[in-house]
Image (tube, rainbow, N blue to C red; front, side, top):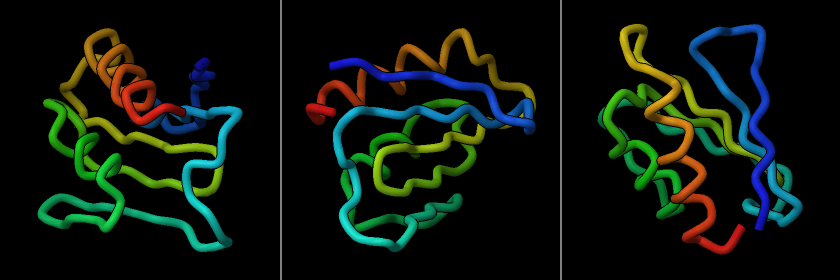
Length: 87
């Protein structure tokens, strides 16, 4: 499995894309602090230290970090979770 990590115009957000469909259909999924999702992968990402919120659509998930969090710590953890789910 390979995950493509891309920066976004927002320095506190990174886009994680896969070759596999993560979310079926044409609806996006967003999880904000204090919320949970029917998608376990989104809930697991929200549990990571430094993650503020997550957004997903079809082949990608965008992770927004807290301002003081470090991408060097978060990126490998996000990739590991995406790979654990087989994407």
